[in-house]
Every structure is written in C-alpha cells, then in structure tokens.
Length: 196
Length: 196
Image 1 (cartoon, rainbow over the protein chains, first blue to last red):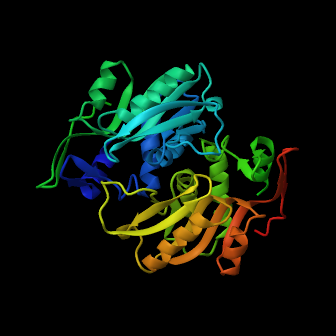
Image 2 (tube, chains in turn blue, green):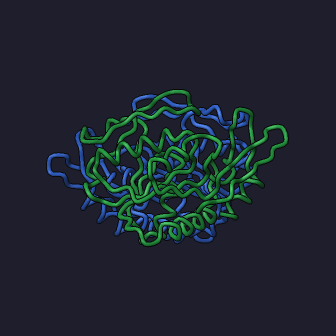
Image 3 (cartoon, rainbow over the protein chains, first blue to last red):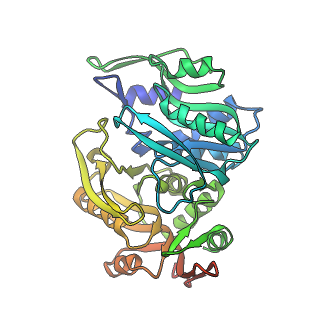
C-alpha cells in the first residue's frame, strides 16, 4: 500500500537491532485517516470473504481494528488482553506469547463468549516480525473452533520469518507494507514488491 | 447518552465490589457503531472548543479515541503507554498510576514529541471511578504544558469520587453515562440524570 510505505519512509526511523519505529503514526500517535485508508485496503484485499468478527491484540492493534471494522459492515472487534484482570470471568481462552520487545512472556486471554464456534474471523495487527503474537491469536482461534478467513498486517518485517511461516502454513496473509531491509546507519528502508 | 445507557442496562453486568462489566461492547469486544455514536456525542458536547489532539491511555481508551477523532476533523490520537518498552526513546513524560482493578502501580509514558506546548488536548477514556488514570494523564498534560480543553468519559461511576473531584478542580468533564448506583443482587443499574 503506497500511502503506508510513503509514511514509513517519511516518518519511520530505523534503530540498531532491526527496530523500526513507526510510533509517529501507527502505535503511539495514531493517524486515524491513514487507519481508515488501511481498513479500506484490507476490505478490498479480503473482498468476497465472510467476516463475522475482527480479532486483534492490545494495545496497538485496537485502533486499526476498530477503524477497519467500519469497512467490514461494522462487525464487532474483539481484542485479546495481555494480563489477567480480576474483573474477568474464568471462562476464557488462554495462551502465552513471548515478546521480544519486552523480553518476557505474558498470558493472553479472550473471553469464550466473544468467539463462537464456526464464526469467520479476520485477524488484524500492526506488526509482524517473528509472528509470536499472531501464533498466539491463532492458537486461541483453534481453541475456539472459529474459521480464520485471513490475517491482515500493517507492517511486515519481510526479513524475519513470521510472514514466510504463516504463508507456508496456508494462512491468507495480507501485509500492507513489507519491509525487505533496513539500514540503521543510512536510515534507509527498502520495501518488497507487495504481493497483495 | 441514551443509547449507551440502554446498552449498559441490556449488556452490562454488575459484580460484587462495585464492579460493572461492559466487556460485551466497550472494553473487550468493541461495538464500533456505538463508538462512532459516542464520538459524535462528544463532538456535540465539546463543540466550539479547539481540539488539536486527543489523548487517551491504553488499552480500552484507544478504540473509542480513534473512532471519536473522526468527529474532530481527524486529529491525531496519542495513547499513553503503560510500560516502558525498549523500543522507546528516553525523551518522554512519565507518571505512575495505581490501578485498583490490577491492584498495582504502573508507570505510564508519553513521548515528548507527541505533546507540544500550547496544544489543545481532549482527554478521552472509557471509565471513570476514582480518577487515578485521568489524574495521571492530567499530570502528563501539565508537564507538557498543553491546554486541557476537556475530558470525555464513556461510563462514570457517579458514586465514586473521581468525577466530583475533577469537576471541583474545574475540568470540563463530560461523561456519556453516569451510574448512580448498582445492585449486584438484583443486577440493576440506576443512572444519574446526565448533566451533559
């Protein structure tokens, strides 16, 4: 998606250790007009698919998922929660996700009543690198016996294995921008030709 | 806001300890059409105010803030983050917020470059009880020397002190639904006449 690639080029910053910061418009400050355009693009890419619900994970997934839902007939958005709160019932799907950014594993839950067997689900998230968060969401989908219609990602790090693995596993994965390489010294970012 | 009150009556559940669960439409599963109507209502309530930016806090604030931003001319949404990530610069505003739900204090940060001196900010969040999270966001606004134009809340627990304190402090606080009392045995919820 050209608009997203241009924003990453203009406002993204490359840090040592393959870190790409896009917090100026994606995951700390949010450009809701861009989010809206991203939602329209996912709607185009997943046209013809039955989508009953969008599943994402807190925190950065929530804004893009809510904006995208408008383009899928206002389907409900469910976000997986990262810690057990004493407000929650015991009746929940649980998995554990390892975060390289935060360097720790954390439990992730979705209340069972918000994912019903046979529902058709679109998974959305802001980033895909090694794919740990997505595999956690997929685990929950399998537990809930829902149909994963597709996975939409804003920024995929194409040089890490997450996207390759998910495509090999047969998931209909659409990333709006795929970073092929980054140079922290020059600050340059190269995108893969988008397969979408 | 009648639509929100009706949803709380229909889908909210009252638990012992003054816990009101609205996770079916507000903070676990999200009804984006309702969020859109809430955004329109805040736009009506804060009409005439200059709003350059919306500030909220992860996670449940993000969805409603993004949807609301559309009604304020697509202003940027900034969400305060609850833990320090190694992806973040040192150049940030920091405060600490005590969560009664999670029974612990956690650091909250906003990158300094996303709140600029003199900007006019609308603070939005899903819940107001004792007001700890809001006072944390207000601290950050004061550090950043931004102008707090108003505070918009989805559900205020009117029987706890947060709203009273903030109004006494002079903040232009607009809550879309104010719960006056709840009865966990009967499951009944009574709303205060809305001052908005």
